[in-house]
Image (cartoon, rainbow over all chains, first blue to last red; front, side, top):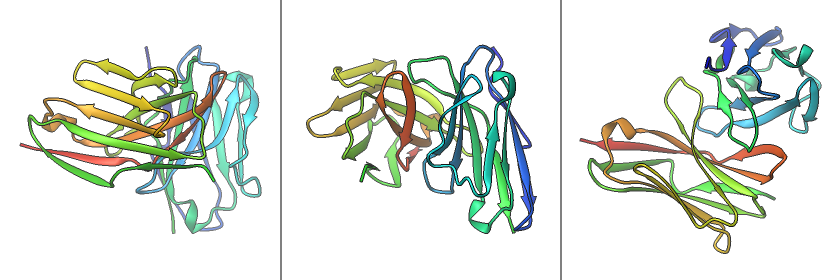
Length: 112
Length: 113
């Protein structure tokens, strides 16, 4: 089966600009997650979707981050405006159940 | 506050020896714990899951133990190989049904030939 797809793989922007990331989960996986992984740290959950509904977005900085999952399949994560501290790898994961998550390769964001 | 600690940032082990990684947690009652492997430039890859009522799980050269009294999990790689070099992450989930994982910071393991 095809894995979780993410694009772009790399992005460099200046602070205060906006950026969007795209994720296509494994077919049939109802649950989709976005994580932020800062260098040297473990992934931190930003938002969790079940189909196209939000289950948990308690750690999403809602003043600048937004995410949507239209039709319960693909998802986009947007940052507007970006700050220097947003430099990180943004990981998308999906799961069928029982907690095992399949991760995409991530998007490395550099904010200058 | 909830905290997950992995024993060290980096661990160097001689090839052929057993590598043991530690994951400790506080202020948490996990329903299950998972271990993931992450290579540079890639997303984490699932290795093993162990439930709160299980003491030990094995998969090929991998073994995980889970002690809810000590609030600790140990991850062992026996007969280690250079290809086992990677960062290993432990992750805890509060309950089944809500699959929200909280990750530790990871341990970077290097197997020296």
